[in-house]
Image (cartoon, rainbow, N blue to C red):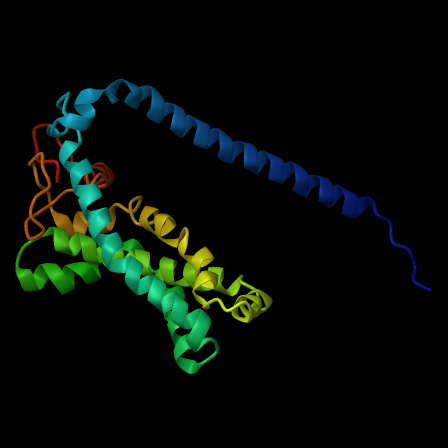
Amino acid sequence: MMKPRPSTGRRFVDKMVSVWSVISALIGIGILVWILSGVITRGIGAINLSFFTQLPTPPGMPGGGLANAILGTLAMTVAATLLSVPIGLLAGIYLAEFGQDSRVADQSRFSSNVLMGIPSIIVGVFAYTLVVLPLGHFSGYAGVVALAILMMPVITRTTEDMLRLVPNTLRESALALGERPKPAYLPGFSWPWPGSAARPHPCCLPPSIVLSGSTRCRVPPPTSPSRSITMPCRPMMTGSARPGGPLC
């Protein structure tokens, strides 16, 4: 027969851990509220029509907007989506329907998982080496390549997971009714690419490395320097911003 042990010590440890967890959560929430309140109170006055229609001014000078950055971001997002979505969807279909547990499929899944965990700065350096150095100048193509690399593994893995959610009984029922297997694929095509398109844009470093800056309030040619919304944060992060100096 086991000898019962007093529960006083365990209850004390449990209470201490619970209290520490609550305190840690409150500290984290308080810091988040402090940051958000500072951003909102300092930035709400800059949200006007000029913010969306004018060019940026040098750091330290009032006024200006992000018109060229907004146009550049939209152009690069569309181009990267057109490049990455077909490849990612086809790869996901292959992994879910044809490759399954083969050696090639396992290696492809492993590569996709690794790409999803690679820091964005590594992708930016890779795109810089692959596109910027051979061309000899910054360009929108480099930004498209960097964003597409960040998007493709997300699309691939999401498509495969969605297709694997379709039960085999549903596939067999569709075949028994004379339908082609294609309808079973539709659930996996509905939403992988919008989520993947949103992944790279919070990452400031890839656009900063491979794009340089364009001050024209229009979408520049893909072979010329461009600008994205995330690029103005680079001088703020590195401390290189100065009144009257260039933004990037």
